[in-house]
Amino acid sequence: MLRSCGDLVEARRLLGLSAAEGNAGAQQSLGRMNYEGEGGPVDLVEARRLYGLAAAQGDAGGQQSLGHMNYEGYGGPVDLVEARRLYGLAAAQGDACSQCSLGVMNHGGEGGPVDLVEAKRLFGLSAAQGNAGAQLSLDWMNREYSSGPVDATEAEMNREGSSGPVDAMEAVRLYYLAKRLEDVAATDAAANELLLQEQNEEEAVLRRAAKKKEKKEKKRKKKERHTGGLDRVDVADQMPTIGEKNVVDAADAEAREDRGDGEGREGAVGAVASPSNVVSLADSCFSIERSTPVAESTLGGETTCTVCFIGAKTHLSAPCGHLCVCNACSAKLKKCPICQSLTASWIRVHVA
Image 1 (cartoon, rainbow, N blue to C red):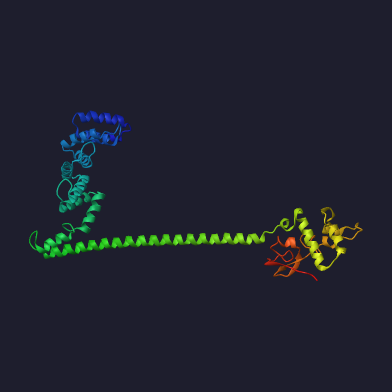
Image 2: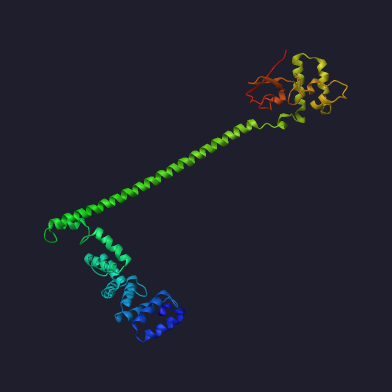
């Protein structure tokens, strides 16, 4: 009732007054408040002292709590023998938690000898009161044990009678139980190995997929760079610069000499040698005021380069076969300017 009060500090003070008068219930409750830090700081030493006062008066809760503190070493040294004794006192009064804890100590041989029969009995008493831990322990013991440990060595002793009279039936029972445990262990090991193998295979598949994707991406980028270098031909790159004009003029003159045009054509070449004398295709076609004829080399006609409109057509694009550019422009182009097909090579044509 006091633990349900809203003012834990006041509850702790009142319990202290009652505990000082020797009230076992108050001593046990105040010990728990010190253990959990309710209404004040945690004080495990004081909690252990108060539990001891309550346990000395036969309080089952105090015996159980003091047994737990001895078992874990809270507020003092670990004392498994004392813990087992205190659990036994509380278990005798029907404390389910103490019965389960004492069953664990009997099963593991803590604070005393191993006693599986007593452990199973204690688990049964605690489980009957609804203790979940005892229920699980009892179920496990019913499945794994009968009246003793599953041990092939013990089975051998029963068969040979080295520890008492020969008990063939008990020996067979223990052998079968031991074999069953070995089979379970082997099955677990095989299952773990299979799980590990599946995980390794899954990781290998993921690594192969990632490697394949990376390889495909590299191939795509390489192809992109290759095709991109052929496709990106700017008009600015196709046109010769002013600095290259002398080269273009020289190539044009060479082409005219090859055709035998003579000096009659040299005047026309000279007319277009200066940028100020170059006439655009639009001006030549649409000007109605021009009275003088325009040189053919400015029109991109039958003999003039279709790119710069300055040099003579001297080079043929293979494999499409279009005769369309001069020597200077052919060095810059990777596509035929007529059909836009890729050019494998430029072939110089000598016109007779």
